[in-house]
Length: 160
Image (tube, rainbow, N blue to C red; front, side):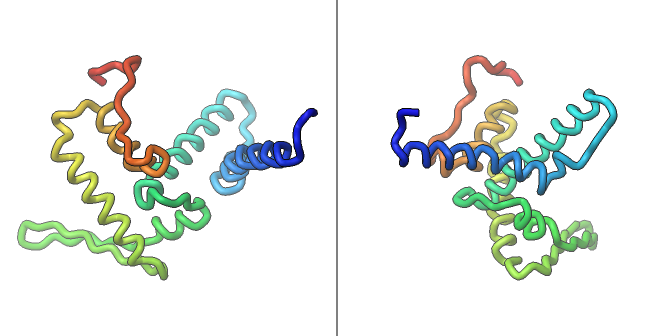
């Protein structure tokens, strides 16, 4: 190779960054933990896990758009809460108690997400499903988009 040492080091870091996602999928999401006897079921499970991983990554980005949070820490932080549904005098209430030390941080994140969804719901009838997804992704990926809003691409169906 005709590269300088710094260029080789950067290539090595880039390779490691790409491998980190596969390591997370295998060790934190169970991508390597199933052994079906046929390829069709194996591919099906791999796709389900990849969809769940992507969905969780977007959900956590909505909670904290400025920082990547590993699943090993975000799942206990965001999921381990006890909820109680109460109904009284025609009103329904949901009380959530989170025993985690960072419960206040989680509560603020959920309140921000709830406000975003409430605002999105108020305009949802005017938007197509693709436009709604663009708004959700724009918020989740605001760090990378630097505040720019995603717009539907011309090759997507407008009526979806």
